[in-house]
Length: 586
Ligand code: PRX
Image (cartoon, rainbow, N blue to C red; front, side, top):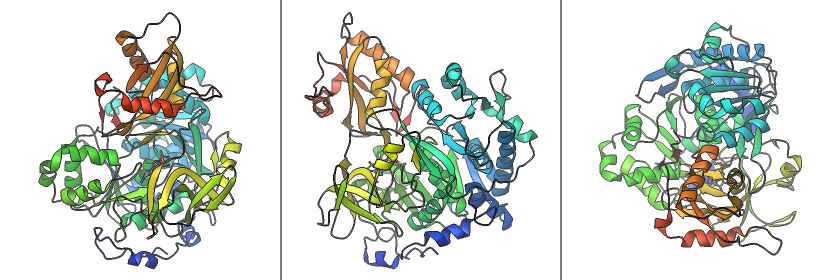
């Protein structure tokens, strides 16, 4: 079904065996994952129930490391059992297949119970980013129409409780108390108590095309887009993880992504467990010693992280890395932004394995292009995986034509038949339809393909900001700040940053009666952090008398970007540190 990985070491820069990776047979793979009824497909069944039925329930599934390194573990059977109990709780709370269950927990063991419980009940798992403030959380909860929210008590009380009155769809809130403490309050119930008291429910026999998870991605205009995926995604996620990471049963797999991002759903929750691996979950924030320690002490074999995290590790130097060089790593990979050759080489020097760059999007649901062990070219995104057809296209309105010349820039397009391809932008049918032309999904990324067939990232075709490997829509940041009475007009752009690649910066013109100055700047930055959260708030604010505009009156972001680049460093005012893509918004 899946071609074996070549025996070459990951560092070998070789393309000859690319051809030996035959076209993956998605249908055959789907057949292997089918259940609980013949012809049905449910992620929870494919990942957990299948293993339990095969007598492999005792295998380690999740190892969670608390902030003080307290270890909590779940075997496959324990996770399946707790998820089945949660499924019964959800059903009792009125959840029917297709309903959304929002989850705001950060990285922790209950996230696994929540996700697989939702899937067992046939519900749609909708994880939210814990570094978002109340504003972005409200718009996402509204768009999802979630009936149930599962959250830690702390995140709920700080960010969502005040919004309850404006979220009529949200009927039930299930809270996880700090350190297992029982939860009190009239507006919520105790997640752990409910799960413990429930009886396990059987997994619903969903179909491959039934909705399974919902993630949000930002657009350059309008509200965030709800990107819906079906149970069929498990097929591509399971196989791509095997192809790229060369996963073997009992591998220890660590993915550092926050649950709000699809990387976590695909490659922390689904793919490694479906391949019989154990996942490591770290609840704490970035700390280089801790991260090296986890890699070594927990005998991590496969590590999936971001270029920003790698740059953070690099900053702490090779001497620290050398202390931990004796590790169990076989493959290390990154996603989210370009990975430069220096970072690839540093991986080899510091950790003993080079980093493999992988490319995909929330919309594609699984890795589409990657450097695989044995066929890697540092600095490039790699090649399309077997079973994935990619092309460079030139687009004019609704017409596309392939760009066949090597190294010519065009828009990256993928054949729409990828099993993990998104099935809808929630409530935006026309936008969804316009993303596909002649059976190709157009990604919005500008790339070039070299004569070896490797793809190189050139940039985005739109104004999206990439900060700490996360995609930020300037419009959402602008909307958040427009609520402040001082703001007349605002334009937000990405300013290049050595560590985070870009940081969002805002240019603001003021309403009459407001004076530009340090006091107002601090007030606006604080306001932005409170309402948008650390992940979206601009890092700098600049006052302008008038916005540069196009002849049709639109803010000229290009001109603002040039201004942002020219702004001197000492003009910056940073309110709170951002560590390696993790946003400290305590
Ligand atoms: O622009 C590309 C960039 O991240 C975008 C997708 O972001 P998101 O939907 O948030 O998903 C991120 C993780 C799956 C892409 O359109 N991107 C992703 N991977 C790479 C990349 N840019 C360059 N190189 C990559 N390897």
